[in-house]
Length: 404
Image (tube, rainbow, N blue to C red; front, side, top):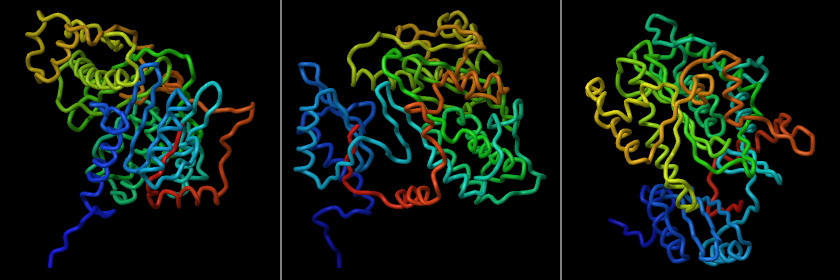
């Protein structure tokens, strides 16, 4: 016997695709245009300057606009076509909490951070000032005492989700994630140090203030052969709108390079790809903007390598895909600008810094704690509140709409 379904059931493999096709068709009927560079973003522009932006995550939606009438029309249309629940202004979404005031918004994951500390028995530990010992370099420890790989993977996996609002943890978490195959006591000690740093900075998050600039600026950096095992370098970038970090990455390079110039060049090429994607998404929302993206690099040789074809003989062994940066520079899409190592924000994504350098770069990323009305609002919640937070994440709510 074979059963033919007349409609998609929740939980089947094709259900997410069927749901996306349905909601995409509905958005098209409502005049919302899908962003070709981010398929979960839909935008509707009016001739009088009104705009509505909808962000979709499976069946959870966030939407915002600059006109109350347009907002009410979209909400009424959603209620007529879907069984939805309006949860009001966004306070919590996919593990990220938001505080709003007249000056801007503050994104953080304090409840999730405290839940991690309690889960792994580190809630009462002593805090440290930085997530990794300055100058330390991990490597495979074949002769060391093996740790519990399951617990190690659970700890690293939980910490990875914190990177949504904590770019200061990007390098350290991505570093320990390289040793999941056979973690030893050395690697477990580093993970526990990250948790101790998290204990002291659980209330830290990203502050986005109004009127602090609208220009997209990137920072690109790389170390040189930082991985002791395979001698590959680590690339890092940070993109900011004004003074606000909106995108960041710390990732090991796919090839072994021969010099610091090549390492910085490859990091700049990866940053350029991300910068183009971000600029096109921003252009979908706001048509205003300049025609190029500024990326700061602290290596003048890499900048010359991207502009001067005479130097191609020294770099022709580099993979052809990374020379894509030359075309972007020639076309004026990307503008590489030299900066000093002291000003390099992306340095926090590539190596274990001293406390002074780490704190300085962390402040440049707009990481801080939020105060409303002169009172600190991030006291540790009671255990009952944390349990409720945990219960909320065990299932997925259906047809939920949250307005920002």
